[in-house]
Image 1 (cartoon, rainbow, N blue to C red):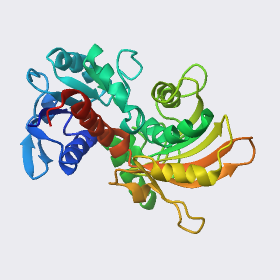
Image 2 (image 1 turned 90 degrees about the vertical axis):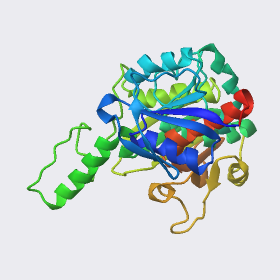
Image 3 (image 1 turned 135 degrees about the vertical axis):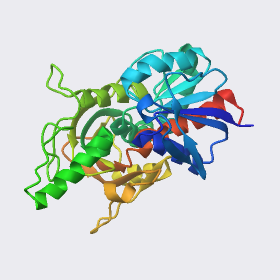
Length: 340
């Protein structure tokens, strides 16, 4: 016996990826509904070998459905997620709306799967920010061994994190570099993204950080340990898919780089590719389409007493969004609903 599953926002990048991953991982689905806004009504999407037509989110009745994977923005989520939850359908939300709500668990299954039991307060589970998700997968096994005091992270985030329009903007601006007659002004971003990097993701806050940077701080504390100090600089780079992070970790006790490498090799969801030779590391282009979070460049930081540096890469549409949501659905099924 399987589940009745709804994918909300099925025509977007993340929604389509959710459908792909549900099929790839053979999630026990008895029935699936794909929803979109009225402007996308009737658009066809694929689920395995099936072709499905989107239904109207505005009129859909969630009664009798087991879980709904939401891949729409916070505005739509704010309107429709409570309706789904009230109808008895557990919402797994990819937006930022509920991530910081104390009554909503924020889950990365490799890190804090048992937190899923907290879903019952609002019938909602939150999916973390893409940049946070891959980082905490790497932090948790190291934290369990040596206890992390402080994390300094710089991100190199692909344009797919901003959606299809951003990917189109990078493509058009890149072509325009070779054909200057067709200038493509920045619309999605504040500056041209082609052949450039932009140290600005989301809005600026009063302390000079951006909201993306604040998210990484707040979410790491909620998922891993509130005692960890985190400082982040988040940068948009001209890459279509795949987020990269340079992470500096300071521990309370010494952790040898070889032991750290061994711990990460054994950790769930991680693939260590770390050879000290040309090409002995993973780049974002190589991680596209993969489920794993890849770790490279593991090395001691001699500038602090107990420090490690590492390079972390993952497909942000997968682990950073769709895959993590499906993994949450799997945990929900295994630990709570127990139908599949």
